[in-house]
Amino acid sequence: MTDQTEQSTAGNPHFCVHCGTKNDKGAYACNRCGERLIEVTNESSPPSGLNSCARCGGINNTRAAYCWVCGSEMKDEVRIAHKVQPERQVSSAASPRTYRPDLNPVSTPATKPNIDGPVQQPDLRGAGPDAEHDSQTASISQENPFGHADSITPNSSGTRDGEIPREIKKWNWAAFLMPAVWGLFSGVPYTVVLFGAAFLPPEVQLVVMVIASIYLGAKGNEHAWRGKKWRSPEHFLAFQKQWTSWAVKLTVAVIALLFLYVLFTSGA
Image (cartoon, rainbow, N blue to C red; front, side, top):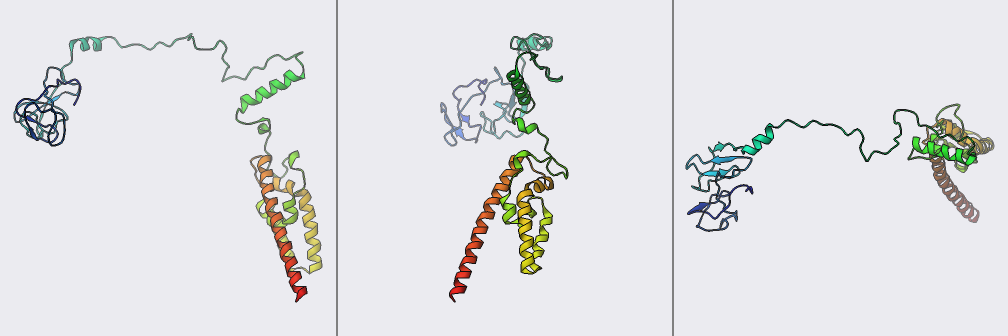
């Protein structure tokens, strides 16, 4: 029940507005469902208004399921409109407020960067090389506050004539140990032709695999960088490091199996 309705102990009898149960005079709550027994008057009606019972004309709250006066179900109730207080009418009749923005708020800083225009660089003439370096670092932080200085370098991976980053120009052990399989996942798909070496004579097969392993070990990173799109040089190096770990483990396992095979064969 709303707080705006007048609340008092019930008359005799008093019906529960929630379940319609008849209760004794002076009861605080319904003896069946526990709903508070409240007498409703129209002297101070709530904003939602009141309902009048179609049977006895008793005044009830709009949420009442049963009339508190006669106990009948509130099916054909009549809505009692809310009466607006005079002072509210005066306040509602007042002219609407017009929004006037504060053109000089106190909290606004004295200097505000121009978001639409270019960032003005300070005059560093005569300040020395350290000040110029700090200015460049600050400019990079403004353009990409979540990255670092290398993040503004153009990513040339995935292009035929892309520039090779200096940090990836080194030996690739995964390409040396597993050239055919490594190339399929690193952007060098033409290494699949190395699987055809299995149909060559053993001497030719050995020569082809040795030459291909040495070449890809030295130049594999460059071919992989230009053959596939990578997020960054760090991403490329992390991928190659993982493949190197797998290649070393697989090579050790194959050598161990060959050693056991030779050992058992010679013993037999």
